[in-house]
Length: 613
Image 1 (cartoon, rainbow, N blue to C red):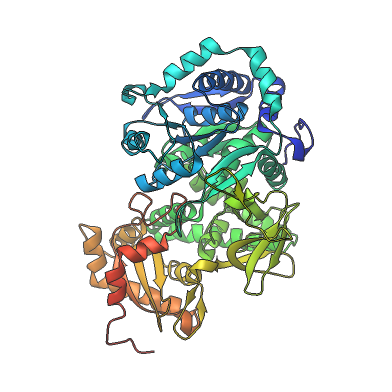
Image 2: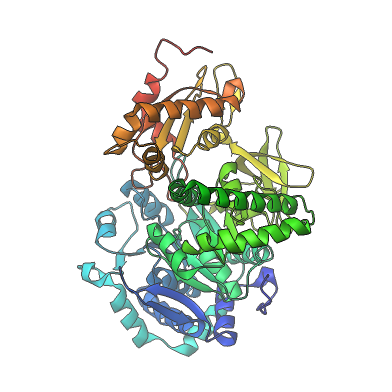
């Protein structure tokens, strides 16, 4: 249920320091932040809300001693660890502006952000980050003057987080801290989030306390959760979704944040903690679904049949709820029995048996993945929004959803479609503009306040928004036809062998594709058929695998119109990821990077003889 906690003012007047003060006063002993002290540590360390505020006050004194003050930008590059979360709040209490940089950023991207933001201080994790940051201290075009390193043993000549904390503990004065934080105003900048750079240099999106507090309040009204629920925080804080879900919404709800320092360990955290809520970008839900399908493929036929029957009941129930209908009593009873006997024991093995709110955003969710999870009684409430809109503009919610859509506009957000289908939006959660190097803002909205999102979509008669693709990513073939690559890619990815796909065809007469075998499902599929392969390359070269991929492409083409059909493809063996550069840190395709990296392969797919129509 939406939080019933007292707000320290009207929603449009709330600031982050005011929320933290309320939590420390009214929810002092509730758990606020938990983390594991190191790799392999069994126990969680936990701070209550009163303890969090004391830590923030001490850190604020330490950072102030380094010269951090109101209006300063401060850069952070750390994983999801307490030093990051607490420092972020400490900077906000000083009136400074925290700017998190993706840990996978290349040196040239870091240099661009450091130069563009004019930050003089960066707080980084350890030796891995030092290699990329130290050269900037000698770069005359970068204002950076000082580094603080979280890992004391790796700090070298730079200041350590521990020494900064000790300095803050000596210098902290409670009266000065309590006098300073009320000076923060709702219109003050709360953070700058740099876009992940799918199409060029990252842009700095400045968001105010008012932008993000309104976002938190309005999103909370659509989140059906128990009070003070736990949130597993594993996405980067450079991502607007985790900033809202892992910092600002927990502050509003006085909730409990569990930091997961390694995103690859999130499945283990879910198994252990059995959360009531979980957010994942589409690729996370795809990977989880692939893991479950791989397990199911190894089960005896009788057990798999019982599971599929339970899945059918769950989907039938979801279909009634989706249409806003009362679920028939007989179906509800059959589903409840199947859920208790079949689904919950299996979901419990993955820690997913207590989930009451699950969500996704950032890119169109493949409908087969949505339907898969609906078969387990898990309705993914897909949402849509941008960094520039402080997070979500539209959400599905238990009282109104359409699987495959991204929901309806939240309170205070207006939507309309341009002539070419581009989605325009305006409202108090839309940012004021892109940060310029001199600190001013470049307005991105028109004279009436409408911001062009760059996404293409349609609105149905009930107000639900359905995404098509990114405007800049639409393929225009040589005969002038527009094609949504995401539509084609998601269709072909419905086959379990295919984990990732990129479609190409701009200025060409037909489409080609790069396909990547799913690293979990493909071996399971092969093993079930007695196919032995020592490596992904051998698997991709196996005649039965090639024949099945051919059939997958044919099946996808049968559901697409002629212009959208894949005429040729190349099967790759190595999974794409942020570290290798093909995905952004939020796991979206970097199309330009992939086309450049595999340009020779793509060109080869267009060599004569041309495929038959």
